[in-house]
Image: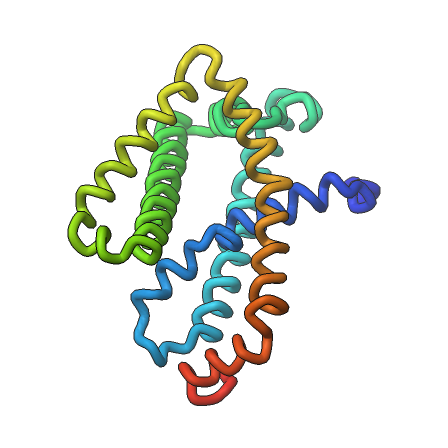
Length: 219
């Protein structure tokens, strides 16, 4: 391992962004999904379980992915840096190069893309539902009457907005969106959420709300 990379701030920025994406912090997903819990459900316990499972899954995925890439590096007799692509190419080029060197590569490639597909569908489910719940909080009367129509309209709008990304020049738009909506903006919203909870709403009031739900501040 190249331990000098630990002093590179861009590595830490990418790692923090990946951690926020993986756990789902600052998206509002946990707030939307936890609204379906019982009022006295232990949110502290749920948060700890979610974090532990996420960390375990991330480590396991990292071992699997880099095992494939390392195997390809040995088979092709090339340094890992030469077969490791950046951006979307890491999925559609680098990983496939590693998988293609395995026995029964067609089966592994199918399973790999099934994992990618189901992961993408799962992410879209919770993202759409988060926006849907936010609309319901702001426009409650309209939401009660036209809940299904609002959900269908959101899906249609997102589908139309996603069409340019699958055109010939869509990869350039994808890179712009990935660079300017995932790194800086996500960190900014996370900081603003912390400020809003701790100083605008008040940390003592927030802890009192948790204690009211749990009965006591414990797991």
